[in-house]
Figure: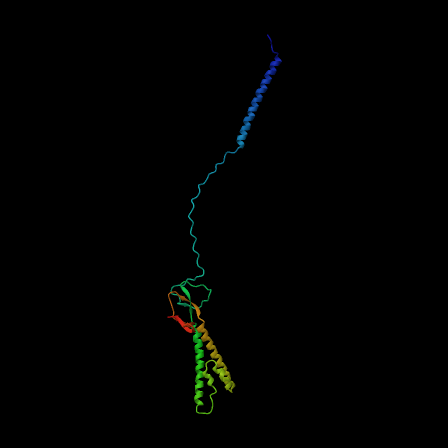
Length: 219
């Protein structure tokens, strides 16, 4: 009967114990590594998806406030004369052309009054020299506007010449105002629904070849 030496059995047990310890250490190391890997990986993040908001219908943009109009009450003036082209037009009004009444009246009164005085002086002087051999030196006063300037050469008085010059300048100014008022209508603002009679001189055609000045307006 063969017997194994005691030293050999001790070595075999030592090898088995080492092998078993190595397997146990390897198993523990693998388990620890898996635990660390599981701890290192963060849990998945849950993202909450919001449902899309319902689209609102497009809102109409507010109407722009007109800046070039001025609101005027219904009982405003029938005519606004202090207005020029390019300025704001109040609501309820419209541009219209009217004669320059002030210039017409002022020019007519100035020209007419001075001419009547001249004509009166010329008539009196004509009656005074009637039946005599003397001539009337102020006959030119019967001519409007130019009459005083025509009479100056016939005068021998410096005082008379001075007044004749003033007279001629006054009649010229009156005539210019009258013509300007008649031929240069003024643009004013009239209230809607209101019409004022007016008359304006305008060039007109008469027949096939005739032309001249006429009056047009509304009544």
